[in-house]
Each structure stands twice: as C-alpha cells, then as structure tokens.
Image (cartoon, rainbow, N blue to C red; front, side, top):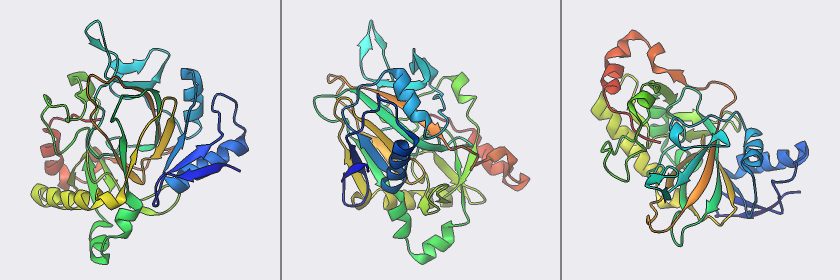
Length: 308
C-alpha cells in the first residue's frame, strides 16, 4: 500500500518510498492515481529522472500537450516546458516567471488540463513555492443562492490574465509572440464544473484566463468573477508547497487554482513541467456559440491574450 503523509489538513499528500526511475506496475500506478484524485496535490520526493522517464510517468495520467511557448521546450522532448530564471550568454534558458497569479492550466483550451506535473531540478536559496487553492471546498462553501446563480453559467476564456494586461511587468502572464497568440481561440467552460473523474463540483478557473460570462454584460461578468475569485483564494483554502531538489509534484487542475511565487533573479531555480490534457473534450469553442453572443465574443477577441 502507498505510504502517504498529509501536506495540510484540507488537501495534499506526500507519497513515500516511490522510485519513478523504476518501472511501475499497473497496480502501483493505480494507487498513485487514486491518491492523486483523492488529495488533489501529490508529491513524490527525491527523484532522479531522465527526460524520458519523466515523460513516461506523466503520460500515464493523460495525453501530454506541449505548451504554446515553444521556445522553451526541452531539447530532448517538446512535451517538457523548461521553467528557469538562468541566463546563458544573454539568453534565458527557460520561462522565468510562470503564472505568478492564481489560474488553472490550459483552461483557455477546448480540452483543458487534467493534471500538471513539475520536476524540481534546481531550488532557489529561498522562495519559489507554489500556492494551491482548493476549489472543491470553495464551491461547497458558497451559499445555495450563489450556487443556484452560477451553476448554469459558462465562463469565456482566452490565454491571459484578466487582472494584468501589462506585458512589461514581471507578474503579467507569459507573453506570446503574435504567431502564438493567433493559435489561441476563445473557449467556454462551466464556472461550476463537474469534475470529469470524481463527479464533484468545483469552481473552475474563476481567476486567470476567465474574461467574461456568456450572455452577461462585461461589467457584471467581471464583478461576479472577481467576487468568486476573492472567495476562492482565501487563505483557508490554500496550501503552500515548498520544493526540494528532485521532487515531483502533480496536481489536479479540475479542482484547484494555483499560483507560482516570484523568485529573486539572483537565486537560480529550474524545473521541468509537463501538462496532461483530459482524455476527451469537456469545453466548447466559443465560435460555436449562438450568434446572439457574437458581439460579446468579438469584444473579448480584441483584447490582447497574454498568460500562462
């Protein structure tokens, strides 16, 4: 049986005695997968993995999707995105400040992310934690009136951070080239989304890439999303995860928000990241919505998408 230690009273767990460099039987992986869905954040400490071993483990959770920021794909495998603040010959080795605001990975895609996994290669002298916010608990704690209000609503997403559109700041979402922006359509997902595996409802991506709500005026939609985001990221829902060298952490994007934290550029930090998509579509492309919403979507389309 998998030996687990809790990371917090509410969610998160550490699995002990697992060596991902060795082949995992289906039964052993099944225990890991069940622990992942039960605890939402799962870490396996002190691993020593090649790119191929890391990708092989990640693939068992779902199909990997290379990040749109292709200039920082790992040379050994494009499914790995390098996160690093190191500079070599004046050029960055990876994405330095990845998502330093609460968001949900790939919520701007038609088929969103099931899981994201990070492998810690180099740990800064201080800082660099990832913050997680439990969206099961955040939804459960809403009033019945608010649940009734939001349950039928669809959020409108595109690549970006609605709270920061200034491409010159460190806290903006990672900036795309014009060519990369052109590949990012408008997408809708339920604001209160039923988890495709557990069947539980959670608030979904109410912070980050959600820029509007179908059929709702922009100011009203923004006010509601901001209210939900403020509720969903309260400290009582949060877990702060500190990395050690060799740690692998995997989290459930369907039931969590997460945020990177800024690291002093003088303290080197490097991680490998792989994001796994849901096995089947659960979102809908905005361009397939009824023509009545065309004007609302066109207004959002004129915004500059720019986030991780």
